[in-house]
Image (cartoon, rainbow, N blue to C red):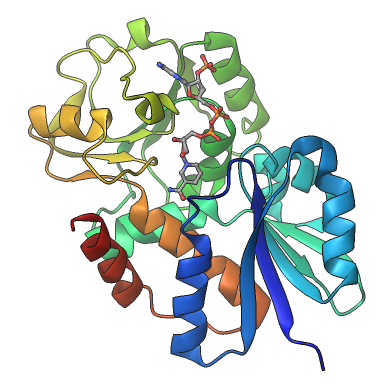
Length: 276
Ligand code: NDP
């Protein structure tokens, strides 16, 4: 009757908000569990995961740069993780096997639709970036039946490959930033890591349709470069990824504990803390 252990692995990991989020979820749902952080580099990943699950570990979150490794490590995977080729959540099954899931995309969709009233159905959606985060959000976005999905990336070949990987599901337009001139979109999602270095992909004027909204998957204590750009475009909503972070955590928590925590009070608390 050891305490159920959970953790987030990654590098860097010090500033992760996940332990705080899961602690709040556990208190709220009265789950007896602990959730820690471990600085794990790619080379140590397999050893660290084995040791964790051999010592009372029940579930893990994996973040940069470990999501692809976690995908490869999992004994079985959900469809959304399979297609994403990236796993952010590992869960020990009753039979001892390790299930890999990717809750990032559903976290984004829930934040958009439930928390901000941004419906994806029939919308023209533009995704900036073709890295792991883009890969993770595509299937959950597709499932909401948008009118179209376009992926623009600096390295165009990566956007084409990504679109090709999902082409059996839905046609995705793939292009470079220059090709976006003259087009406009109802929702622009920034899934590049540009915001982390205060940069912005080269976005042409008129890219955002009237009454359109913008969402940066990245989050920071101040407005990201993309959120500032969105405000300049008079976006109906200019959001960052804090809500997505909490919602993806709630999905992981549900997978592990079978209980869905209320996310609104947790998002509210984190919002209040960052504006202090
Ligand atoms: P990757 O390193 O896998 O991909 C980075 C992407 O950003 C690539 O498409 C790259 O283009 C592009 N890029 C980087 N710098 C620039 C720039 N200056 N101009 C234009 N494009 C640029 O990163 P991830 O996909 O893992 O993460 C992307 C973002 O999503 C991060 O900010 C991360 O914090 C966020 N995220 C947030 C989550 C949440 O819960 N809120 C969950 C997961 C991710 P190229 O291919 O040409 O190099």
